Length: 196
Image 1: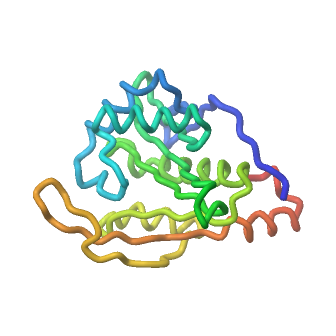
Image 2: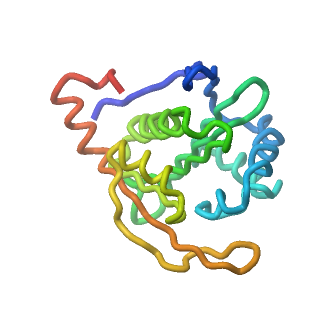
């Protein structure tokens, strides 16, 4: 399989809003915390950890430095307005599977940034030679689910009452997946490996 490589930073136009994409580094921790803390709890329930906590973002940053996680930030001016993370566990039974997590600030939704972040995450998966991507979100995040499905992800599981919010309310999580290896093979067959 040929690899897809991206270079950052890069600028993208999100419906008239200039956004800079760049890989997350240790120096970005405070900006990521500010971004996470600006989001309602409900938007973060699909994540395995509460990224509004400094110790969680510090652990995230440490995993990036160790090369165990890739994370891309979207910036509007000096403010983080979106992020994506690709998590792979090479010591698990599923080293060929990556989990893609994407979150976009509320004021940037509907401008195409979510789609861009998912596509960039997909490119990261291709560059790592992954065969499958999974993503999860709460069932009420219908717009996000629609964007993922529009990019070829399909529903694989519904986990009822899987997460609890701070008030103890339970929420369902939907698991979506994408066959990255199949798409890569199709791209190669048509000579489109540089198109993505």
